[in-house]
Image (tube, rainbow, N blue to C red; front, top):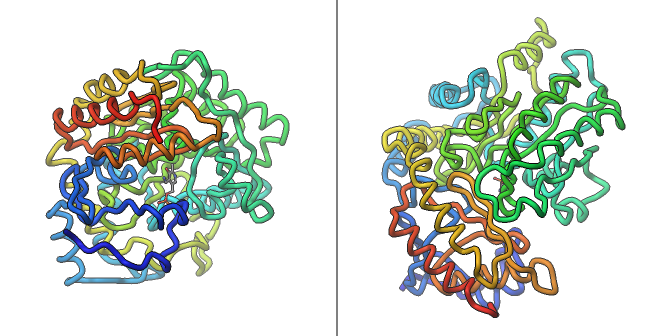
Amino acid sequence: MLARPTNFDHHWLPFTNNRMFRETPQMFAKAEGVRYLTPEGDTVLDGSSGLFCTPAGHGRREIADAVHAQLMTLDYTPHFQRAAPVSFELAERLAGLLPEGLDRVFFASSGSEAVDSAMKICLTYHRAKGEGQRTRFVSRNWGYHGVNLGGTSLAGMVNNRREFSGVTCDVVHMRQTWSEEQRYTQGQPETGAELADDLEEICRTYGADTIAGVFVEPIAGSIGTVVPPKGYLERLRAIADRYGLLLIFDEVITGFGRTGAAFASQAFGVTPDIVTMAKALTNGAIPMSAVATTAAIQDTVFAAAGDQDRPELFHGYTYSAHPVACAAALATLDIYRDEKLFERAAALSPAFLDMIFGLRNLPQVSDLRGYGMLAGIQLAPADKPGAKGSLAQRALFDAGLHVKATGDALIVAPAFVSGEDDLEQMGDILRRVLGRADLS
Ligand code: PMP
């Protein structure tokens, strides 16, 4: 048995019903491979790679060793007019993985920071071009882009935005792409590309010359995995080009192999102007995120600074490019390369999606969606929205499976090191629990 805390009063948990948690705390005390261990010693299969963070599995010694070695060599350096060699190596490695042209990398520590950094890069770029009036952004209903004030403004999940209205910036939302006719579609839906025209409509209504950029998750993750219709992202790209907007793909969930390609941009063959990434960048081991953009955008911003002695971008964090995070990321990228984990994700995907789509006729299931190693299970809703998701998450945990619930959907995202037997066990637990008429 591992120690369970006796006092739950002091730690205020994020995005948690803390009152309920304190009554029946669900805790992990240890993790190895694709399994967690509770303080009582019960094993819980990890169906969501933690929070989409650990494609290489938990407890990777290579990452721990790299972190330890970096801590003993150079534990910290500021990055304001200073730098360490390790961050340049990491930026170059990322440039090699990203779609061609996205090869300038800015570092931060979380997905939320990456999103806000990307917004500021957009604003700085337009101002550098003499278009400083482009201050508005476009995103999508039900989108999730973190919880800093920029990301809160972009948020299409209304609760996350409404609670803080008054301090958010100017964002117009497009419609989400899911529709009734897409129910139970595996992979990209055939219909819905024209929903991208919402962007054109917004450009006409608000004036394209007031809009800096459009943020989308290539696969909308936090709504419960909504896969873009065929042609949708291409159409967004074309409209953004037509009106001089920057297109930003928030790949915080989809980056690093989740779609079977390094980035979803490559899986869908559409290259944005900016990509944000986090989570699997360090296999979840150390907080780190990054924003990648093009030389053209960087050159424009640098040119505007001319020969003045000032930063080109008035933005950065104490922990931007933290050397220990860089070392963790480099060790993680080595694992992905040496174990061919993105290829493995692509190879495992059919068995994974077959398992998910085999849940179709269960009483608790009302829709299934999936692409690569990412799937959404929509639950037949109860009277109160979100109640079913919460019940299912707890029932699955008790049955030995960790999955992330969001509203009345479950997001399943196994590690790429999962074996077929792990996927079978996941399927067994899902069938057993979601096959029940009553989850309470
Ligand atoms: N963008 C997307 C698409 C995300 O899924 C998330 C987190 N789930 C974030 C941004 C925010 O990341 P973080 O929680 O690390 O700030």
